[in-house]
Amino acid sequence: MDWMLMPLRRYADFQGRSRRMEYWMFVLFTVLICLVPWILMAVLGGYSSHPSPLALIPALLLLVVALALIIPSIAVQVRRFHDQDKSGWLVLLGLIPFVGGLIVFVFMCLEGTQGPNQYGPDPKADPAGSFG
Image 1 (cartoon, rainbow, N blue to C red):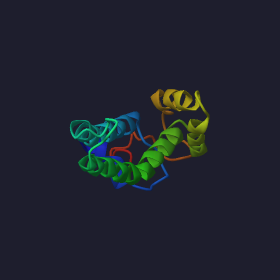
Image 2 (cartoon, one colour; image 1 turned 120 degrees about the horizontal axis):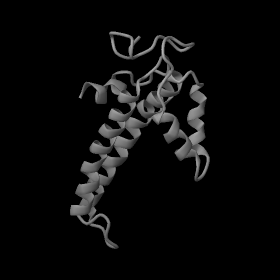
Image 3 (cartoon, one colour; image 1 turned 30 degrees about the horizontal axis):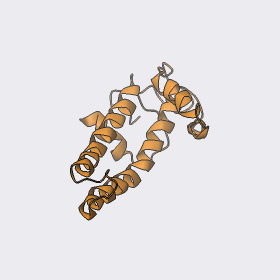
């Protein structure tokens, strides 16, 4: 659970490095958090041709959650690129239609550089986790 919440504690921290574990556990956390409003919308008929006004509540909740998680999501992605000794600006690759998301996905799966790099110490070697 600590890995899932670490990016929230480092909310807008675009410096340093993050391990793959931190990134993927945060992705899992985001999916689990977003599943709740999605399921509520399905139960309340939010996906029908004539949605119930009550289905707007989980839709608004989903919007609030998405807006709250956008900055830590970008920040942890930037730190993942830093872990591979790459510029955080590579996050913008995700904006390329059709293939951008796939390219970023591949980069997020790659292992980071071992030892310190220009963005900081190796988070795997750092006893304090990825806060180094």
